[in-house]
Image (tube, rainbow, N blue to C red; front, side):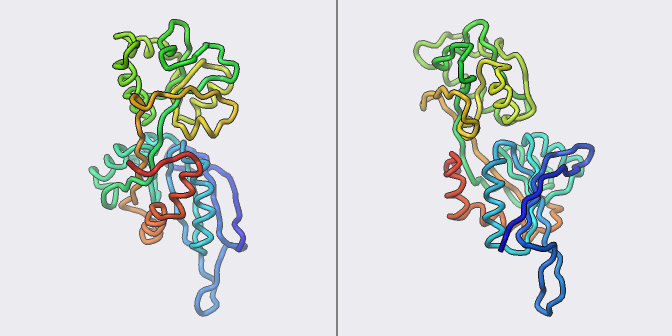
Length: 275
């Protein structure tokens, strides 16, 4: 069986989101028991931008074990996906870079059941390869003149990065106003962590705090580790939406996501087991 790959724009309410549609068959239909054509099951997944590379691969692998399923993956900031769902956008599953956004949908009656944690992720500091800001350690983020790229207040990476900075401020050798100095050095706020990494890669900032998976994904970026005692584990959680067009197929994919095959694939991209 051969998987086809197509990239296009998927409309979600007033927004357009880059999506990847993967089809697990050589034709748009499959044969039913009587030999009649059966339309493939359409499954739409809204996923955090930081999941893009891993989920594109996971979708291909899933369709090798679930023939007849057509997956459309839409990637954006988790907070943006939540807002779209709240405004009426239709999807089957929402895979977020945090627990708070899918839990918020569940609390509002827009999710079916509680969110399921399926992966973890650590944080790292990245700089352009030539390191113009001379960022050798996390302490250098507080040095005057260092240009830091960050995300908007509602994007999950912002919460995790703020927590990590607060943890660093408590370490020996860090100034008491470390968090204030770091905040003062933020020069731009991007829509999601993928945009943050791209901005730093282009040299439009001296440093940023991103997920370890993004630091590894963009090979040209220079990585500065965050000490284990200050690092933060991001929890990735998914939820089937209450008005999912294909709830049974959505539940099946969600079950598979927590299984051995999918978990091994996530680890290969730098994700860890769910906390």
